[in-house]
Image 1 (cartoon, rainbow, N blue to C red):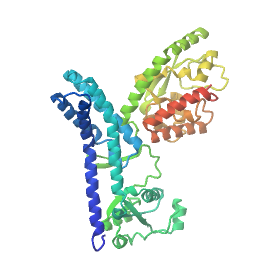
Image 2: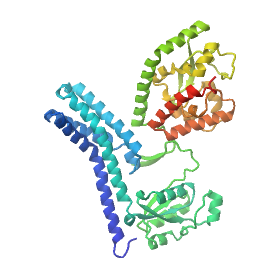
Image 3: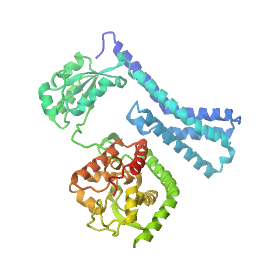
Image 4: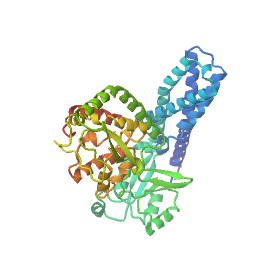
Length: 477
């Protein structure tokens, strides 16, 4: 497991020490930077750093340590994307600011601070925090990319998931691993037939693994075999006679993963196979975005909504708003509002979808539907929390009961709050679902949205929705 002179072991130990130092710095980076920027802000504004500012520095440092230490991107990866760092740090810093405002209001101490200092401090600290976390990530990456300290790794079992892991190791040197090869009893041709994975000849067989670990100085072994097999148990037992680090890769290739991640509950390891993307700060950011944008849109659209209401009432008998039961979060029934565009208000066990040149659509309703103005009352649903600006479109209860029996995984789309618009709608899935394939395509987009969700994806979908409504009205009727 080491060279005769011990250089590999010593170098790797130094790398572990460096990584430990860098990880420790990440935990204290936000408190230190926020405190430093508060001192700088008082100096810039020529305000004395009094006892009140000392107390503010202590409280803000504690809040930063609490809200920025265990965020999701820190738990799951040494190297989060720059976008993840910006979004998560921004949300955490906003939470710190909100908490400080609340504390100042409750303790009635806000008048002890200069407004100029507080505004300058809050605004200037955010880019400093971003720069600090990006710099820490860069240092971590440099420490891990050293070829002399990379740990030699082998993967036991060849399948789609293990092949993907091997590709990641070979293309991302910052992981600090060097891929030595696969371990499998099958020939490459047989592996290609059974797994659909083309690979070079395995490094050795399962029985030869322990010898190869010692001979080739393999320091990390990933086991990608079904762990319920007796042979896997005996292999894991045999690896205890080596000093290699062993990781078990569950074979989840047959599972449609949505927001998959690993975690633990009081020391018990668990793997999330299907989870809502809106947990913790993510859920808070989603809700804040909905409230802010829907409020602004309602205020801006109020005159237009009044005009629509008057036109509906003046041109056809019946109510102005159409209320329909639909499924919302967790499959709970919600009432969705729309401007009435038809001569009927169907809300029973049988609902016929609107079709092109549908005789039930009123003249003013045809205009509202083609411009999607009939959806504006759903901004009220968003403020109520029943809907979101972006998410899977809610379907009538009758349609849900029909399609949940025909489409596998259909109800997964209800793990999130339904939306006024969604990924399916900006990709052409609007209007009538004339066939089962149309609905399958829409559901696939909804699940893809849940799998890929980030705050910027919502913004992108909202912008695309504006383009679709203005320039692509062929499917809205």
